[in-house]
Length: 580
Image 1 (cartoon, one colour):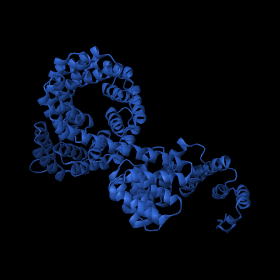
Image 2 (cartoon, helix red, strand yellow):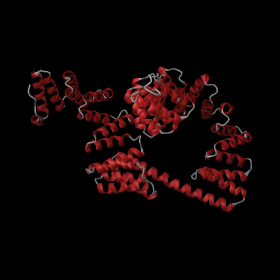
Image 3 (spheres, rainbow, N blue to C red):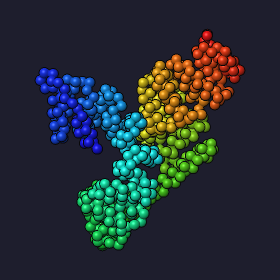
Image 4 (tube, rainbow, N blue to C red):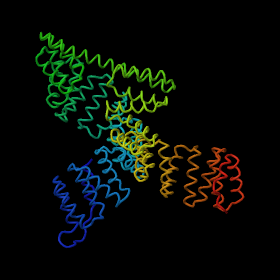
């Protein structure tokens, strides 16, 4: 897909007239020739020379961005692709390429925002929806990803990339029948695709049809003999079918092709042990443990193999290690159960029971940050702010990248009015978990209080991109846009909220105010009438409706609304009532 965009973009550029020496068009042609040879340094140099002649050409910025991306310079690529979009707003190919680059740089909120906007503006542009779905799958947002893919398939029935991604979701959700049907549909147009045969084999294996699964794994290997997962999967299927010697051959191939895969080493070890090649099996189990030290099955099997070899002392050592691992995991499991019990008590507002459960969890597993974090939450709920602070710090001492603890500590600082420290904690939370919408939201609120409105807008947009139903974030964004004297953007934001929550009187009130700000008196009146219809005792909405009516020249109706507002909330009489 990446190469297709490169050649597509270069093909649509037109030459320009010479400007003394080599023209911009000639430089672009030279860059294209270098790009086709994958000589990225030469291509990049030529594009930069072309931009020196024509700095406002979006196509050259775009192609330079792609060349930089393919050369591995992602930050510079993002800069050039952003320049292309500034010069040509809404360009779907540039939005897609920038989103892919942002995601590679760990900027998933920016990528999601770009892709959602692009998919909304250009619903038939398949690559944007496919990448959006892929990111959502990586985030384990299965439902959202499936919705995007189904929307794409309604526009492009039979799109094999969308069907393949749907199959991934259905395999993950233990729906092998649906996955198999989608993969078979893909294979009609891509019969030699090794990955499709591998995934179809996994779906058939998940459904219990081992002979058919083995046949698909063989087809995958025939299409790509170096596909290690297919050899591993075939080995497992053959072992379950009782074909142990054939399985051993496949495990050898998998371990050779994927020397860093602990599962391949373990499966080979198990097959060698079954074939009574104990020395070789021990070597494979040790290799699996070197790659994954907490690989419990490999450690147990190593102990058994050592005992079979007659090395009882070494076997006892491995079993002791396994016992310690079991004990640790048992304590950890018990601690996690205690934490779940404590969380359930918190939800019931039973703070004493919650505190007891979290305290016991920290005693069982004193290195588990989660227990200290929830103890801090409980202390804060009990009004013991100083203890909460200490416990949040303890949680972060044990786990410095614990984003949820940083979020709570930032909130603690904000409540104390220590906004610079709050901003720092919220920033750390967004860095440690870029997909935590609440961290972006709280960072935006803290930045608003420090006067950094521009960054606050960006963080609110990030929160909304991560959680499209985050109503509070949308409302705050609209209010901030209004404060920045951008009533048109604020009105769009509030209307977006109302599409999801058409009975929200407060949002109708806010919409009415920004429309008043924009001098749209009729629109303001309609919005404010909706607010008071939905919430008749909403004094502020009656007052604002009076302002809209007054601005429209309807003094009698305005006075009636003023009187109703004053009746509901007498303190509004102190507000300055504009003259007619």
